Image (tube, rainbow, N blue to C red; front, side, top):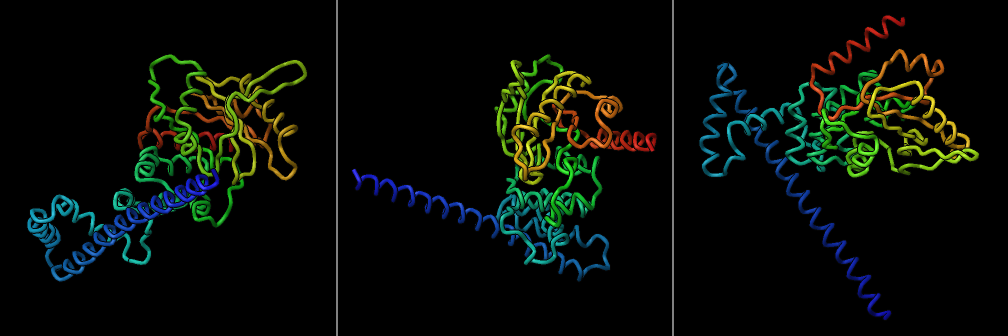
Length: 337
């Protein structure tokens, strides 16, 4: 029996060694490809400098180079791909600054972002959170950076991503609106809060990605007993960066002051019963399809930081929608000032 246990233990260790080696080999191949495209981009840039007096020399060079390369090496060396190589070198001119954990698909997504601050943010977040290419693409398409800027300034957003400072306020992490397109719920169909909750649990990993940095799942339908009355909080998380519990309540309709009052009770419960002395006060998030910001402000105490109301969308927002959202927030701030 002991010999069999020893063999099983050895087998598991060897399996782990093989799996790790294979993963390292894949990463090594992926980064070699990145370096190859960077070197191609550098040579194209150097060659273009020789004919810089001709405005059309760059296009001429790439088209003719692609004509020679593509028949021999395939579509990975097409005219469009060579354009990406040149752009890649221009945006990342220092070879030592290339990140070995990124593959070419991830760099393709990054070099398509013209704004330097925005590109740096996604690069840092992808590295810090080990995003795959698909996860990075989803975050870019959901306009994560722009949504964070709705309630934060650019410097704070980048400082947190650079790990120059820890987030101090919930708004620095929690987004409004939240985009839940991965749930697969139709916008026009009627559904109950339990359906939304089940969909979030089914897609918990994607929901954690949308929630932001530092979230871990704690409980679903957390039973709260107050004397003889039972209450159930929809979802409970813990955020290690903010060092606090986060209670999430789900509403498939418009937010009401009763909803805010109920969530406030759950937050008070966690602060008084569950929270340890060294932890920060609990945060409550009400996810709803529509909200009245003025009603929220009038319902909650002044200088409130514990309760946040965040709208959710079942589809990816357009740039126009976010611009309109920014303008609405600006007008609200001006009217209150």
